[in-house]
Length: 300
Image (cartoon, rainbow, N blue to C red; front, side, top):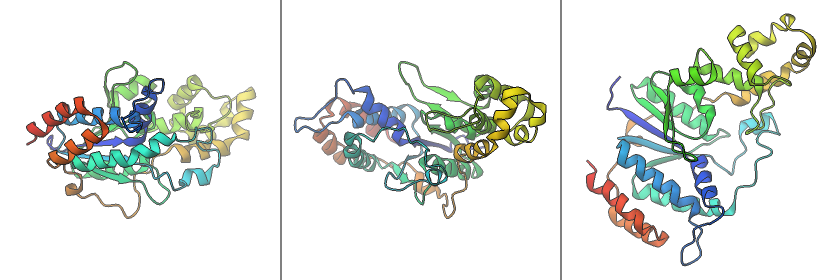
């Protein structure tokens, strides 16, 4: 493993949403009335990563909000309870894209019914095969399933908690699994309210961990219901289809067809200082200009 080949992949929308809701009680507006709340924290975090981690390879991944994901087609209730995206976030995206362009940071949209998770999973696996160390920057726990020796989840500072890096040992300790990939089976059994994943009725975290330890995966559990008793046995046998469906919904795709990993597409280039000044002045990010200049000045 070449330690110089570090790739940072940022899951854009959770961070943008967090930026918006961080100011929900006191939103930030420019003199012209533009709500910059979804933009400013994201930009602060981007600059912080650039200054502290000094990545040579990076990409920001967005969902395509105009397309229905294959998961939604499989299960119409998938993410059904999610609130409509605030208008301020829709308005903010073009500004965030413009900022990424001025910093010369690559960005990609998930396409063809796949989600940002799948795009990140595919990039991470292809990069791992080419000798990269990958850090997935996200607030989404689903990415724990991708953790390997060379792929780690970078949890940014959130709600007063410091950043945290999740490797294999951290996942094992937090969830009691032997392999991070078993996170898929854990969510498949217990469900995930945040994405409206049904799971198996009556199976909470405690029982899911017990079954993972005993059976290893949901398929072996569903083929071993003769070991079970009472109401749990009845519930699981009646809802095997929900278990299989949940696993399909939870599993991050790591082999999106027709996507190739080219190193040069992810290489971080020197930012365009004149363009940074222009967009930051427009957004009234005057204090942030100093940190942006620090990154520009120290860029090698």
